[in-house]
Image (tube, rainbow, N blue to C red; front, top):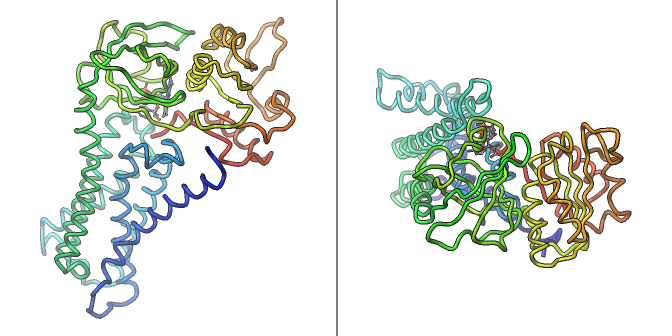
Length: 442
Ligand SMILES: Cc1cc2nc3c(=O)[nH]c(=O)nc-3n(C[C@H](O)[C@H](O)[C@H](O)COP(=O)(O)OP(=O)(O)OC[C@H]3O[C@@H](n4cnc5c(N)ncnc54)[C@H](O)[C@@H]3O)c2cc1C
């Protein structure tokens, strides 16, 4: 059961662990260290380097897609945190270089090619790599870097920084001089880097054993396609309604191209799995042309935008556009299970014609204790329902009087999610009662 205290304890536990691991290198450095301190700025600069490198190492853990690590927050929040932590790690690592460079001219030799060429090249490479990590993330779309190439280069650059950083610490050896300290550092770095290898090598090997076949491709509305996959030679995926997976289309799972999509069918039906995909960029705009019989691979499931653990008597979904996909999976599951819990769906779309699953939702309303409130931006004279964008007023009109009795699920375009989450926050709905899924993680 999700309770406020369980949510807070879980979140605090993970944050504490992250903080301890980030500052642990400082403790490791001072244990048994007997040499004299070298002045505040030097020690401060060195400390920034240790913490910055530890944060870089932990980035591999945050992005390793271990569902248990993301459990209390959700994968989108976890990756968001990874992004913020990346900026902080950059500040620490750059601070390390700048402060030491200014604090003592003795440190200039580290970047001086006439003193030690390989060292100067490697450390200048680290500065360039951490700056490139930040710049390509911040300006990826502006510089037209394709997502897949950005992701691949992100991993390679991060590996380079952690590897050279570890070698640098060993070579300087001022704080990490004992063999046991070196073993701990190298173990930490190898452990962190092996997560990337696990993600990019071991996982695809596992996926290769469980291929899927495309068995149907159907246009739901203009530029939105449902694609169904059938497991080949295995039982199919065990997932919770509302979860998502990473899909790779083609004969091998060892591809850069891998995209996250929510399953829009019910986990109660194991022989087929459906995804509903809106055309957006290079990959999604080709989904309608995928050939029947072609192979696909799935990594997952992930995410906690699920209703299995809720105990509320009334569940409210506030969704926009393609953000309906997890809701469809959940509603079908309620039907399969004969679950008559009170459910409200407030669903914003451009128009009735551009509403995926309009008819399916109508049919579900007849079978479930479900009220679907469509909100159309464009409508004809006959339409008497809600219009425009989803607003707090529209939400309030269609929610029960006692809003504290409900659990909320929000998924859709970022502006819609901001409005919905903001309104719920303002009305005092506790954070653990609001589940959000953002489709625009990096
Ligand atoms: C948890 C989650 C669930 C999703 N569920 C659905 C769904 O059910 N239906 C649907 O239509 N869309 C869904 N999406 C969005 C979908 O993943 C993107 O629209 C798709 O990956 C875009 O790829 P593209 O090459 O066509 O577009 P691009 O133009 O390459 O990318 C557009 C944007 O999509 C994001 N994106 C692109 N590739 C990836 C990737 N490999 N991994 C993560 N993000 C990426 C980036 O933010 C990028 O800026 C979901 C996204 C997430 C994170």
